[in-house]
Length: 158
Image (cartoon, rainbow, N blue to C red; front, side, top):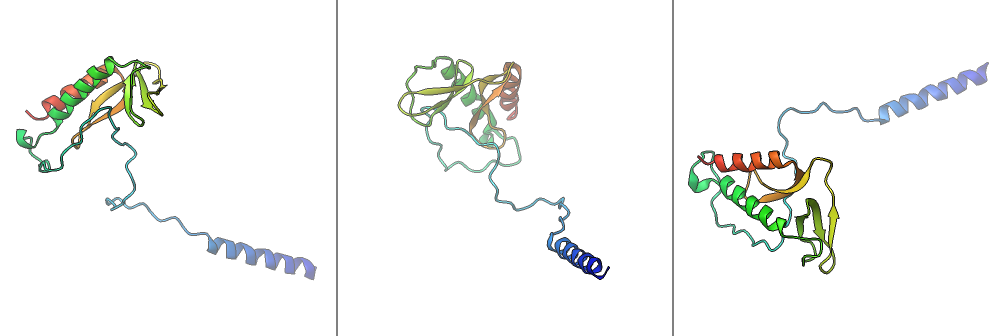
């Protein structure tokens, strides 16, 4: 009987040690954090795109035309989509370029080799205007949603 009591005492001690060793989860704060983790969505590099200058002033909260980049983003997305319409899987490209080719997401790997990734059913690769900063992105989207996003960006500056 003494043997079982010793084993039980050891077992209880081990459980107490393990319970105290596991950190308790902290409650999530509702205040915004100053996290430096990277964003899950990133702009993509566009083929033959020109670098953006950094000498433009930051956008203000007003929708004045001097600081409104949304319309410019919409125009660039439309132009990029038109350019994508002329691309084929055998079109020349530079390593790392990303585009939409035949409705599929395409990345150039190696020398002039587009690797295509089809979108889910009902979606096609589209150039879209960014909403919060200058630029465009490439994503699988429906034509109607892409058109609505471009129109909304054009109307954001009125």
